[in-house]
Image (tube, rainbow, N blue to C red; front, side, top):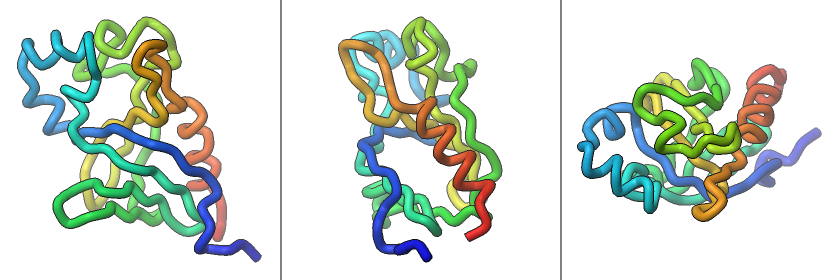
Length: 136
C-alpha cells in the first residue's frame, strides 16, 4: 500500500494557461528570448502523489489539485503558442501541455534551466502518463 501523503515526484514549475499565452504580445515573446518567466507568470512546486497532482501556488485561490479523472491529456510538444523559436531548438525545451477538466489547458516548464534552455518536461510526461494509466 502506498502512502498518499508522500510525493512520488517533485519539482519546480513555471506555467501559464493557454489563454494567458495566447494573450501575450510580440514584445512579450521577444522578451521571452531572455527569460521565459515573461510568458509564464505562474510558478511554484509541482508534486505528484499516488492519488493526485498538485501545482502549488497556481492561482489566487491557492494550489491546483488534480485527480486522474481531471486530466484529459498530457504531452510534451511545441505548439503555435510556444514553438522552437521561444522554447529552444532542443527537444528538452518542449513545454508540457496538460489539458484538464477544472482548469482547461495549460503549459508547464518543469525544472527549467534558464541558460541551457532545458526542462524535465519529457521526464514528467512519462511520469504522468504512467500515473494516469495506474489503478490506484
